Image (cartoon, rainbow over all chains, first blue to last red; front, side):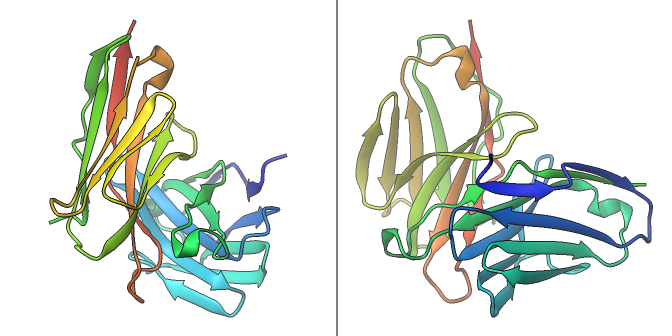
Length: 116
Length: 113
């Protein structure tokens, strides 16, 4: 089983709908992140959470919200989806207890989201 | 200026050759540097991390860091067709406002059989 699990893997929906993408991890990591990836633009950070009570906006948080329900779960919501939010979304985790703060991130398999 | 810059490619090398992938970054206080490999439609996979100036080798991969020049590179020796992928450079800054990774847009590598 994957250490970082994203659901759903694919989703097609219509403009204006509310969508939730979920991420759960069994790695025991305290930090979790949401990124989106668009062709030619690389990975852009939407939100990140360093523990259940520490949630921070990334570079492109407008139109998105998040919830850290538990250390192992971090969900991303699009309250009213619009077509330019069509992208590949990745959840990632990292462990602050290793590497002296220089820890890498580990990614889930991604959710491909299409908004018509 | 982008914080992390990579040539988008594609970089095409013949099988068995050395592939050299380059990355420059703008923030001098950057501390940690990572290379990820991403196959089309798949998630990024960590290949190498480097924190100190110089070279770090792991199998066929060598990461090189030069903080004075704000430059990090990845060398892939004996390139194989299975190395064909997009390689993402990521940089971490310890400043309060930048506690996550900043990614470049990636370089696409094609290894020709």
